[in-house]
Length: 187
Image 1: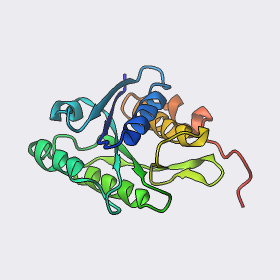
Image 2: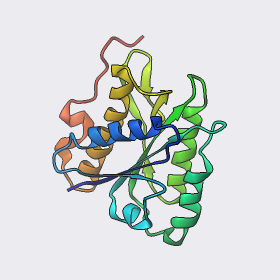
Image 3: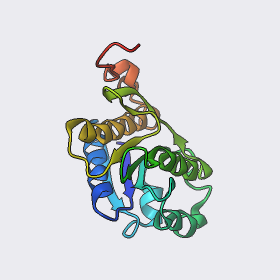
């Protein structure tokens, strides 16, 4: 059974809403067990417990806020080397489009890579001009269908990778299960 941790920091509540959508998507794969934790309540044991992690935060000047960085620098530092090989992905919110959320996702993935996580992006599109290449990115509060579907798709893909590579369920691989999609012809 795949164990998924959705770990986030949220100030206004927008990132929390995105985290909840990631968790919903992760639960779409049979057998996935999902924990949703803010960095203020999470412990190192939550990270040690999981097989896969979705890490998310609001964007601060194109990067991660200090609360997220502090979690990894202080709470997780003694466990460096103990979580190598887990699977990870990122999601971020921003004040408006072009606010640096993709840079934030890359910074979150850099943190995970330094701990040995295998990180990924998603090649399929949620809606026209709405991709998950670096993770799910949302401007402001997620409201539209494509904004809500984006983090759900990310969470489901995390559970699919955990099911495939940790639990040995090859039928959950996105190229096998038929869930990878391009809803319109690509130019």
